Amino acid sequence: MSQEKIKIRLKGHETFILREGWVTKGLYAVQKDAGVFGKNYGADALGVGTNMAKAIRYWLKESGLTAEPPRQGVHLSDLGKLVLQYDPYLEDDFTLWLMHVNLCRKLHTVTSWYLFFNTLPAKDFTKEELCGLLTEQIRIQTGNMEPSLRSVTDDCSALLAMYTREHLADYDPEDKKISPFARLGLIKKDGTRYHKAQPDRDLLDPLVIFYLIQQYFHETKRNSISIADLLKQPGLPGTLLNLKRTVLNEYIDQLADEGLLIVNRTAGLDMVYQNSSLGATEVAAHYYNGRNE
Image (cartoon, rainbow, N blue to C red):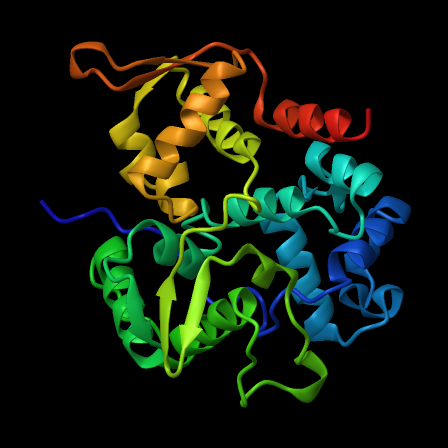
């Protein structure tokens, strides 16, 4: 039986990585005018070029900060409202982590990011090797669709530039800004080679892991999951955050100590059980409110 073909999207970012200041500018513009992107794609309101405005719209939507119901323009999501209220300048890494995991759970609209963090078999690679690996993953996911080499290359360039502090020579000079996502430390560069890196414990709050687990429970209507699945399954903490089993277990135990989860390791079960009714956005509100008490 042939694999069902899926829809994918490459270069939704118009080759522009998410730059410092763009989220702030975009959130305030959307709050002010739901039709902001309907007027010259928002370029005038945002004070940027047309393609940059398209990129800002894309990053806001795909990172979960805005929503676009049919015929209603663009509005702030519940998460977007929280970020605008508590962290509009992205000074808190927690906000970036939530944006990152939201982006990288979207196979159909942020395809290369999803494949890179969830299914890519290699941990160490050159940019050229990454392009080949992503092309193969796209073929697998789509039933042998052959993607445009230029589109895959542009996605690889954007992804690596977004998560590292070095910029690529083929980018427009106006775009040579460090992305705030570089702070997360998920990709490291050594010469011409890149590798996936486990983030620093000081940078990654346990509530990011809890956010993803609660998202899973609410979406699947389940109340338990194995630690093995949390480590290996797409869209869950192990893959999205480059976590090793030992570190993931430490985070889970910390959440259990705080009464947010129940963990059962008796008889080799290694299961995590739901112990809170908080939805993912409520987890974010719990974090921001706690930080500002």
